[in-house]
Image (cartoon, rainbow, N blue to C red; front, side, top):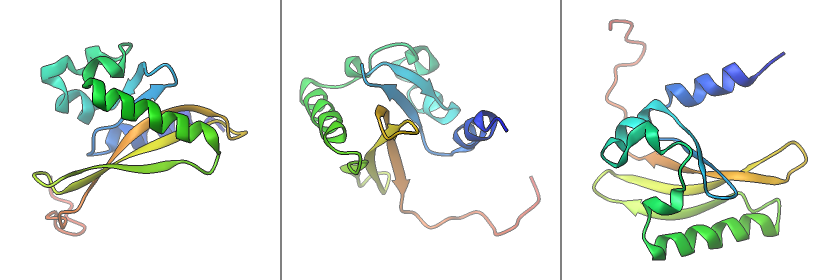
Length: 125
């Protein structure tokens, strides 16, 4: 069974921005939310470009340190990187690994802390 369409759909439906990068820091995927969130920086046109071009030298140094930490040990997979009070969210970098545990890339995970305002099981559009 080809699971790719299922995993892609999970990412496409996520309400948080998802940007996947390879180990050369090239943006290889952005979900629609990320395209909208980063529209003023080029949106979906950022795919294929370096993530490092989007950050300050200090941030780039930390990104590289995190990736080096991910590479040290296959148990190093998640690190807390930022708190955004304005949006009430925590931000993490997450390792992406292949089936044998080899690091193949990373992504940034946003976890919002606001209580959901959507009604439970509200089937009305």
